[in-house]
Length: 249
Ligand SMILES: NC(=O)c1ccc[n+]([C@@H]2O[C@H](COP(=O)([O-])OP(=O)(O)OC[C@H]3O[C@@H](n4cnc5c(N)ncnc54)[C@H](OP(=O)(O)O)[C@@H]3O)[C@@H](O)[C@H]2O)c1
Image (cartoon, rainbow, N blue to C red):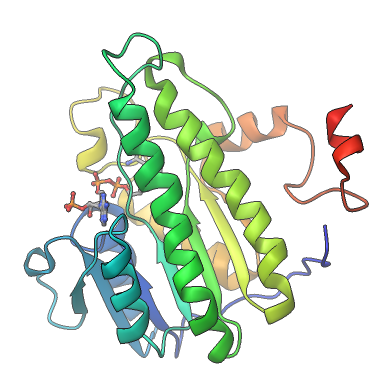
């Protein structure tokens, strides 16, 4: 850990926000909640911006796997102070039982590389605007693997690791980085799954409360908290900077 990640809340009131995947599901609900909490402006990134439908949100075409669209978004949203990475895909595929590695590659391309590309593009924007904050929407499957959905687990675990690394890299410029983990949330992604689900309202409130309270990791539901507790400690809990020798032991 290169920086003491002290608790410092990020107020949504007055922020200029870009939410990815803003046309439906979690991204749409988060965009709306930012306005409710007093954001000055909300940009909604979407592959099909015409689906957004909220007159108070400024939609832009944004496929997070398209480098040109990511660069265009960073240029257009030069006033952003908060980036919320919600866009993601879930192929419900095992690693070995799938016919090919196509699903695993797509999930990694979107959930890991797409999110990383957004952070790389927006880090200078946030720095220029005083530091700001980034929220990455992750999953309980960052912490545990579930074999029938193995490739999603791997991609979300990679994104969790990336979240913790960029938190350290961006600390010197004053950018807070928050990871949000939850079990099943009631959206298109989980349609047809007959399991208990977290409502969009509860998910969005937990995320925003955590961001505003200064949490760097938000564990939305009790199952996610229980699974995280089975791992040991804080996500950036190294007492000293790890060396290749220390991580090899
Ligand atoms: N639902 C859950 O149970 C759950 C639980 C924990 C975490 N999450 C995470 O929460 C996030 C949002 O999921 P959700 O429940 O809202 O899913 P969803 O209802 O399936 O919506 C996914 C959103 O991501 C967008 N998206 C996918 N690929 C994209 C790309 N390459 N570029 C830009 N946008 C893209 C979709 O756009 P299109 O309309 O163009 O497809 C859609 O807006 C995801 O990261 C997901 O992994 C979900």
